[in-house]
Length: 415
Ligand SMILES: Cc1ncc(COP(=O)(O)O)c(C=O)c1O
Image 1 (tube, rainbow, N blue to C red):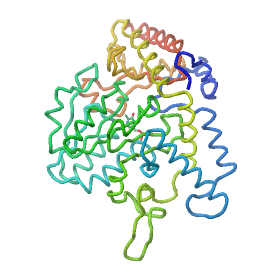
Image 2 (tube, protein in one colour):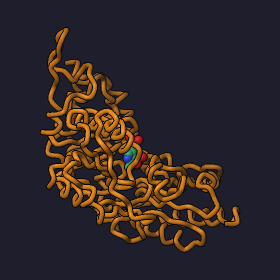
Image 3 (cartoon, rainbow, N blue to C red):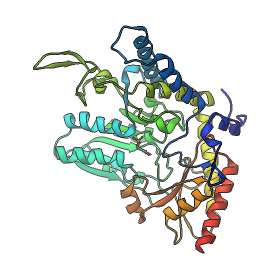
Image 4 (tube, protein in one colour):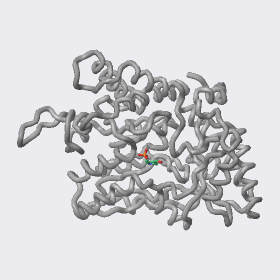
């Protein structure tokens, strides 16, 4: 395993063909990694190889191609288990992404276990994917939703309020590991331990964490963990729901159809055990295969190294931006132990969309908007922010150029 200091981070850029291009005549600076990451050659090659050599449906045929496709598909499941230190591949459910993973839990576990008066606990910084499914479940069951508040612009969870909201009426606590809008790393292990003491089930939304730092679901002590392949260098359309075996086995199926059954009669069906009972129909097969290549790629670099690199860039960007006038920064301060590689900001009297549009003209890909966290934006008293989100193929020189572009935008608007 290499050390963060000795890794030639710029050289890794060569693994990403898409990065070598100009946008509006300027070298592309891709700072929209929280939305989706770019894909290395190894992942693209794995997808092409699968379609050129092994394509067949899984778990169905007994011919050679079907066996190969099935073996690769199941090898990806085992790889995903290792990636997050799950006890067994049987705890890994293939889903479309974080959104589907949370919908699966809300629909299957939630419908079975919640009743009127129960409480679903979330935090004020959740992505719509970890909010809307619970609202739908609350409407269906009569459960209520409560929120662990945030402290303000510095985007930390207000742990002084934990005791007030973490009551025995709470049946599930679902929270984000790293906020996509604030760049906050939450103390999930500590929070899950507190919940566990009260017998509360926990779900961690790992959409922004799984590809950026080492994840150990047993160490975190949660009951469910969800992430998306496309944010960790893998393809779109594939994600992982991890659940403790005993909880998954006790959950009813999410969708019905082929592949998830042991036997079907005209009036009744016997279902397979988890994870297959949750994977109805022909799944995305190339997705797990591409994701397998992505997980191998990331772990060859080392996620602890990626995390250090992300943090260094974020601290550097935060410091540079904090030195400007008329800027409002969101999320933990630079060098706070809670700071991850996402920096959100607003320029005085400039709409976030204008920042993003002008940055794009300079070749810099940012994101502006509510980032699917509208309630959080309202809590902060804004409609939107501009956001730069980093990954290991980004460089300090790119941050320098980005800060120059922000200064040019301020000049243009006289802000
Ligand atoms: C924190 C967080 N949760 C959930 C999601 C939803 O992920 P997906 O759209 O891949 O399902 C995102 C996507 O941006 C996210 O950042």
